[in-house]
Length: 75
Image (cartoon, rainbow, N blue to C red; front, side, top):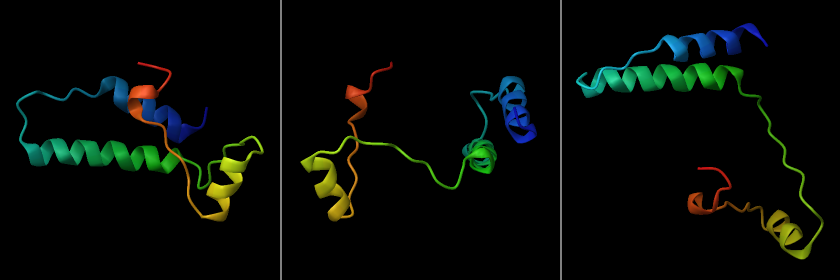
């Protein structure tokens, strides 16, 4: 595991967010988490799709398909 990922995991494990903190302070914490995650996210992510008419059409139209969150396969 790389150092930035380990640091993020440790940061999240140790992070305590009180329920009564001001919104601005909460926003700063969320922003910090976002930037730490962005630091370890690769610049490109790939998903291999099967060759079918729908996938070729979305490629030609410069679109991508998203699944509704209610249809995700995990809770």
